[in-house]
Image (cartoon, rainbow, N blue to C red; front, top):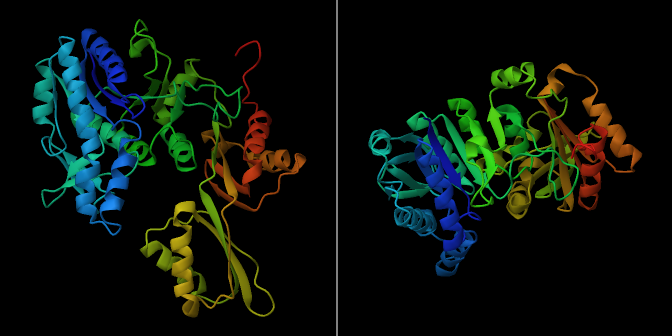
Length: 426
């Protein structure tokens, strides 16, 4: 018998028919003798609808009241799932964020979970009750409802799993696992049996949409084993324990899987792409100490995340160009902030380009093998794809390219690293 947290996203909860399907998947896990807690998202599209209501009511909305409105989406689905489970003969009840409680810190609309009081939850699960918990919501120091930011239900599920000492956190999505790249772009993409926390963290941060970055970081810190699988399976399908999803595990567990022959050790695990970046170039910035700090400090204070940074070699006149990327959604704010600080920074003009994409190659194998970046640059060069910027970490190489070449670049690199499924195997 295991203690399992199951998380279902918005597409899985979109309407009563799908909620009934979810209830059947949950019931099977309990029938197998497991203690079960379920974390749910709002119905697909519901959060966007609620956000629009807030904007219509007051364009300069109070984040605390915004949280009250948008947290209601998950409250509806948790109640509906509990009702549906009861109709199938299961003991079930919903636990809202303030009832557990899920205590959070920091700002409204992007709060962080600090602690979850799990005693009542564990006692209820031990008594054979299925706990249904709305993701994305918690309670602040002031006793008010808070929300965790987009994709926050993944983080809720991992936090609940850590709090109750779950054996596993199953995250059900509309894909049946983590692939070497987006299968809609590369038909020969392979599903991975297991991925390390570190690799998943990099893949999530550079555009792979399977899991929210913060949830992977929390799983890594708390050592919560995550399994990614699909909720769109037939009613007579095998239980999740027998389903080949993708496990997100520690590097130690991954090494054990490789030693046992359950996994092949790949140099590159996956290729991610992100079209939600924008490029900013500041021309003729004074080439002197402190100039770059004047650029990036105001952006940091405004919580605008800067990714790739290139500072060209200073010219004879003691000037240089500085290029960097920001999320596309923050481009207008970043531009306004920099214009405001033009006097302090001393640049000549701002050039922006939102028609760019970031392509990233990720793999733990890079730590011990040279030549991964060279393979990337050669493969792109052979197809005439121009690289505008490069950034690297221990297990990742990212390049900035023209947005129109995204799909071609992903396919070329997938083949270059030998990730394509063999025709006879796939």
